[in-house]
Amino acid sequence: MRQRSLLEAAPTALRSIRLSALAAIVLLTGCVTTTNIDPKPPEEPEEAAQINTQLGAEYLKQGKLDLAREKLEKAIEQDPQLASAHTYLALVYDELGDVEKAEKHYERALRLEPGVATTLNLYGAFLCRHDREKDAERYFEEAAKDKRYRTPEVPLTNAGVCLLRVPDRKAAESYFRQALELNPRFHDALWQMSRLSFELSNYLQARAFLQRFSEVGTMNAQALWLGVRVERSLGDMRAADRYAQRLQQEFPNSDEARLLAESKG
Image 1 (cartoon, rainbow, N blue to C red):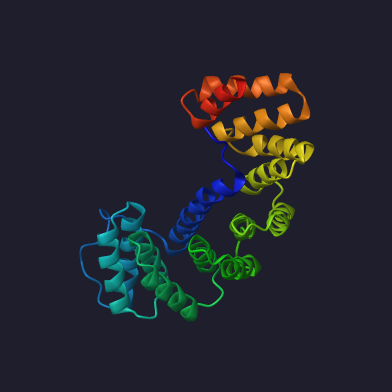
Image 2 (cartoon, rainbow, N blue to C red):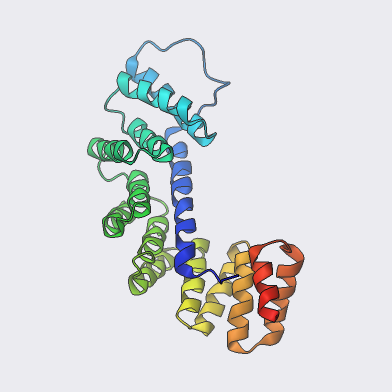
């Protein structure tokens, strides 16, 4: 089996951008469930729009895209100026594969509320997934500059992951390091730096970042397999064997365990 490279793995990382940003929006808007909403209809359209937006967000989280679209379109009918409804609807259309409508609603949301970091981060992820990496970079940078944003390390890391698709490893590394300057324990940036360092044959650096990652993140099959390869590259076979043993015991059916077995053959 061919070893997966950093650049092949980057799109997988990008899928998490949308999910983390979605969670942030839910926290910002407040979320009601489909079972605790007051059945009495609100009197004001703006209030009804807020409720439909929250319901649409909940349906989106549950993967009920048709119901989410219905509620969010209703919210926009009730209040066309509600930026969060446009953002959620953009996510829905993106999931449904309607790129044109998704982009239209992202742009509408940012016209209504310019500079909202969560929306900028989401739009950047959208653009990156659709092969517009340089456009995406600008939106990630804008998101990171929002002083109200508590986690600017997130869009900075996203920018780095996106630029690995170009590939522009130097720029990607710069973004990861910026993220770590803001939050030295940010696991996503530590993971990306450990992988990138290994790809660039900076094995001591890869070891250091992987050790830091292990203190704050989950050592899954990918991380353990990276540990094996890093330590083998450094000639520390005892350390490599420790990683290998964990990989075989904890993730025996993983692709990485199969790669390990093949590497011994």
